[in-house]
Image (tube, rainbow, N blue to C red):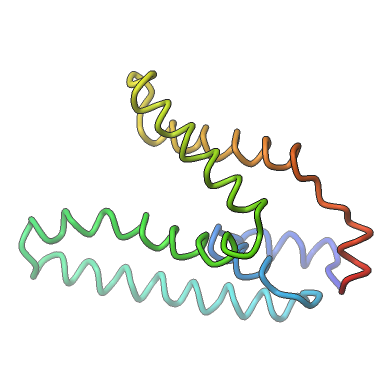
Length: 142
């Protein structure tokens, strides 16, 4: 039921969080489910941005600076549950952590942001090569 226009519209709202929730579903996804998820997330982001901007004016600087680590905490909360049951996800996480440490200690000239991006992409490629998904087997399990 995902025609090309639906795919293009849903792709506009895909983020790592939306993808993680959608990928965790056991049933086939329909456009209305994706649109609902994207709408709720977008409303949360807009509301959170507004609340954050107001709060940042009221909170001390030391506390607002500490909030920068919350994004990493949210990402960890997304990847830990599937890693408990799927060794492929756990392997990708471990590979990414090793690569990130390698950048930190052996290639400090690479910025932290680029190191994270490169580590994520390389670990995903390695995990995909080591643990390919058999689409026919996945479809038969559904």
